[in-house]
Length: 87
Image (cartoon, rainbow, N blue to C red):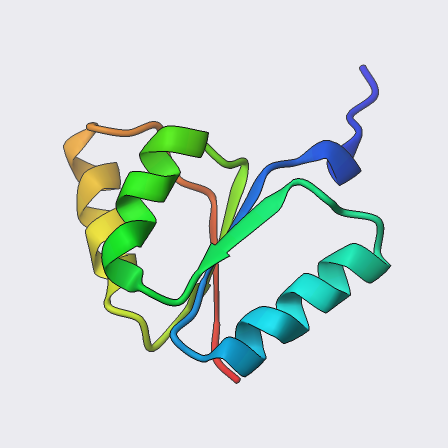
């Protein structure tokens, strides 16, 4: 089975516009086009529920990661593949 990772749906959550722009630029330069982002961590879970991304890029300082972790542990969502980072 061949997987086309460039078609993966990605959600970016970061409260700093500069970080969002940097990640979007990196993704675009690498050939990804199916992503969305928010600077408002309060919107992140609703965005996740709506788009069901394959990967969430999440600023480590965002408190949203605790929400995702609690939802993962409760079984309310499929396991959320999350990459947490800190710039």
